[in-house]
Amino acid sequence: MANPTIRGRGSTSPGRRAMSAAARAAAKRSDRVRPDPAGSPVLDAPRAPAPRRLEAPDDASQARRDENQQVGPVVLAEESAALPPERRRRRRRVRLCALLAVLLVLGLAAVGVLGWEYAEGRRTDAARTEAVAAARKAAPVVLSYDHRRLEADFAAARGHLTGAFEEEYGRTTSKVVGPTAKKYRGVVKASVVAPPDGGAPAASVVSVSPDRAVVLLFVNQVTTSTQVTGSRVDLNRVRMTMTRTSGGWKVSAVDAL
Image (cartoon, rainbow, N blue to C red):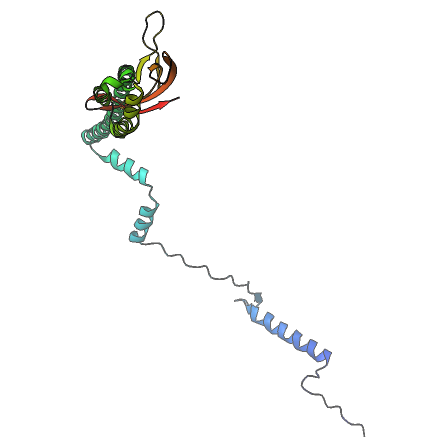
């Protein structure tokens, strides 16, 4: 007697699996078939997904969105258009007055700067003339002395000096120039070189500001003493720094070039 074949759960034959699939497909088609009133089968159309329901926004939320979408200049323009004509004209006049006030301030500032520059230019030109004249006058006094009247000559020279240079001049004349001049009977006469035609003595401005100037002078010094035979002439170039003080222009430095 032949042994019956025993099959497990996972040993379904291909033929049986095909029959099961066909049965399921027939069941689905039977669900879609319904009888019409006359008794004939009718195939149902596939159901479309239900449309989503869109709720209309309420008035408050719509107003907030409209307010957020408004642009500043447009709102201002609409508000300005809504103003009465007289008020709009008044607003334009206020803006015009503000603009004119700003322009006036800028104009006054520009005039002030130009005025200050003009005044500084005038002061600088005046300083140039005054400093050169003071240097021409001071050079012969500061650079000259006579052993017979040293105290008077040194005092006269100090009247043209100012600041630290005045103190330095006092120390130098009392410790070096004075004793040497007395010992050798020295006499020094200085003069600013003048052109042969009798013009102004040779002097030029190196730099100038309203309160300070540097003047270059050509100075001749004639020296006599017991150490030289006859007289000796020294042709010097001297740079004098002139400073404006309450007593006028004074010498604040002397450099021999």
